[in-house]
Length: 333
Ligand SMILES: Nc1ncnc2c1ncn2[C@@H]1O[C@H](COP(=O)(O)OP(=O)(O)OP(=O)(O)O)[C@@H](O)[C@H]1O
Ligand code: SF4
Ligand SMILES: [Mg+2]
Image 1 (tube, rainbow, N blue to C red):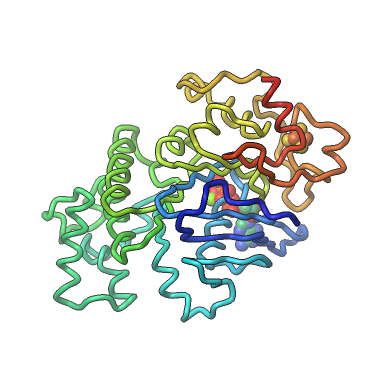
Image 2: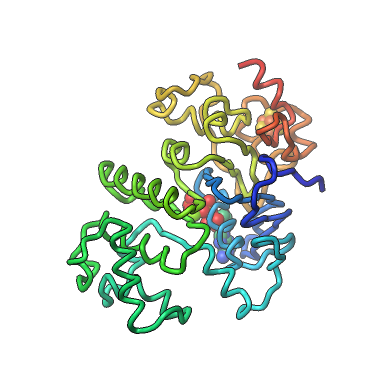
């Protein structure tokens, strides 16, 4: 299979997924949650992952962290192939990618104080000692804007936004290069969301972090990520520089995703033709259509789409698209 080339010119690659497949055996048959995915995350270039529920975003991240071993393909971290490293040897790589979940309360230990929660990764990874860890916790609390008074507080005594600050501080404890944020602001009130996004932008600048953002909120992705990858049924169907991708989506699925959010299209994104609004049922992931998996919902599908699977290919210097007709569709908008 032809390998899509990374969209950006060589910067420092932190993680490289090459042709990664992750298949699960289910009672209904084999389910390919990640289908020949290649993705490079470069230092300082945050990546947004978008796509409907079940498109494989979380599986992709779990495979990247090697919490799930890929069925085939390779995972490289900082240049080293770690795909088949035994568990104990993965520890130093794992700590480099930290995760912030959607619901801060359930991701924190309720019986541990704020500082104990933040120190937990240090304890697990045997970093520092009884003297240095509380100082580190205090420093991280300051970094994420939590008053020192909360040092001995319990998570239930905090607001949702404050709990998410604790979760972010904990994720930063081991000084990772990458922070994965899976719907990390979606359970918060809009005003609190904005505060957390501001905090994340500041931390990115201060600490040189690279984010992988998963969100159904495309405006958040556009704000926070230099690159965006759009997934459909386990595959990346479009990838490119975020602002350009949202202004001028080329894959019919990306067009439909954007068109289905009126507030977002009103925000300076070129209005899309009504036929590109997302319609129809998502096919069963254990019984995918032949050819292009999107063809059952695509208003532009032809006989060729039924017979031939479109590979993810470069159609512009900064754009990869998996559609036979990407150029024609983009020209006729
Ligand atoms: N351990 C597993 N065993 C079987 N199927 C799985 C497993 N994990 C994920 N899947 C399936 O893989 C597909 C992708 O799931 P995944 O959770 O990665 O999607 P997602 O894009 O993160 O969705 P959401 O937006 O709802 O979080 C789904 O069809 C899901 O049911
Ligand atoms: S390859 Fe065909 S079915 Fe698939 S997105 Fe393009 S036009 Fe639609
Ligand atoms: Mg998910």
